[in-house]
Image (cartoon, rainbow, N blue to C red; front, side):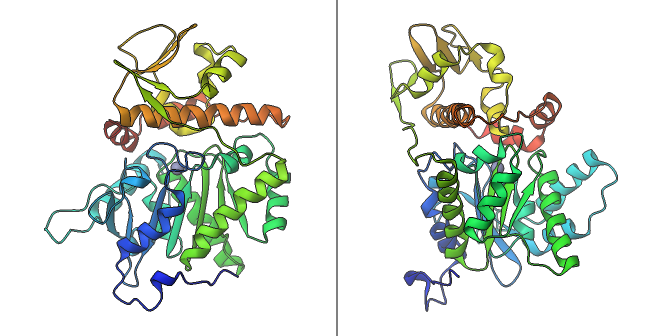
Length: 359
Ligand SMILES: [Zn+2]
């Protein structure tokens, strides 16, 4: 299939892992339809069982040769996920974080690399090149109540092996379920899934061929657009700097707020975990500098925070309304994440770490 080796990588023995990571990530940089805020992650492994992966809380465009990534012993993390027997989920969640923490490697300066992405577990168990995005196109399928007919069609259109992972909080649970899919394929001696659709979350592709990992994701997005009969156009997500706050540069979110007569309760309809990270306790319907998201009648939307955070909030807000609006237009029923699942996510240590890095 996609065995094309990118020109800049052929014949280069000394190409470092970081250059591979930058190359792998490139098509997904500045794509607010695929990545909102510091969501999503990419990773690359070497033959010695090491892996570099986007660091927790960084945006894709913030990965450079010097920073934005971490390095771990992925062989040890993978062994843990393949062998773990869960008796207590909360205890195991803590244990898994410890396993990852213990396997962070040191930089040449002697310091440890920064905290890796909270999804390090599933990256470790997959092939050499892994890409995980929060593509709104895949989420049009992940965030509806009956996705299976559509998934079957995507599978036959693309010829890819697709697995569907039911909603589970990011981190340990998700890595565990993906590992179970790989174990199942090994036991049955069938091909491993190439693409994982994650309910109310996003999509993962992996391959030992860098270009294949990229192409599969882009192909699936295109197949979804064709199948659902929607154009690939996505609203712009720029924000403007006003004197005391930031505001969207276009009316997409504001028009959606008017269209759905959005009130406080509206945002309790959670379509994906990052929504709770950004919106939880931050939305008000009056001018209030104590809250980050002000939705003010007649006046419009104001983001009361730094530019980096306002950008992430607005990208998340745009993705949320894009999904909500299109799912209804397609006559599908949205699947919302339950309150119990949301409370769990908000109390996760890794989410707290991520929140602290938002600013
Ligand atoms: Zn994710």
